[in-house]
Length: 283
Image (cartoon, rainbow, N blue to C red; front, top):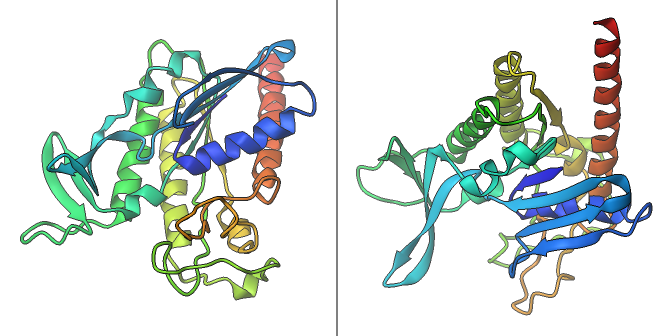
């Protein structure tokens, strides 16, 4: 099972790792220096759990200015990130999650040509919104799975957009998340962009389902956007070891609300296993 995406994908993997550790102590097989690529094995259960860092899912490089990082990225929307795609033949379950990195300054390419950018403020450059890039990236990722010739049937889930809860500023302008209780559904800003990103992702999973019928790949959606929008109390906030004073209102506490994602994940796997067994019995 592989979690593919940004640091929130790793956040979910770590939650699942803790939950499964109650049944068997896992063996750490690999971890890179930045904790972005990790592999754990559960030998008694013949199960391997992995996390692959791929913040855009597609190929990207950070822009440099005189050798220093600028914070901007060149993102190739039609070129897949091989750091995870080369591992597809060994994967049975793939959980994709990505979105927050698309809010950074991005120069977007297709066919090797610059087609536009986001937050770049370049004269005569087409301003393309994050929603455009998110749609293109997930479509490319799922196309890669359906076109994989050496892969077994892969059960692929898209974990929908995970809301952040910064208040009174952004992450670098004094934003905080100090709430101590969940909020009611009526308190959620339903007119915001969170549900727009969730809608885009849901549309892409439906396209992937249709395209995957011949290959036998199974696609599903792990829909967490609405329920997590009501948990502004579930983030680490200032309690995450950042000496610069920033609050983390994007990731989720362990243990905490993110464990619910994995409870839903395990239930979806059980249901799919039952459906597959019933289908085979009818053959």
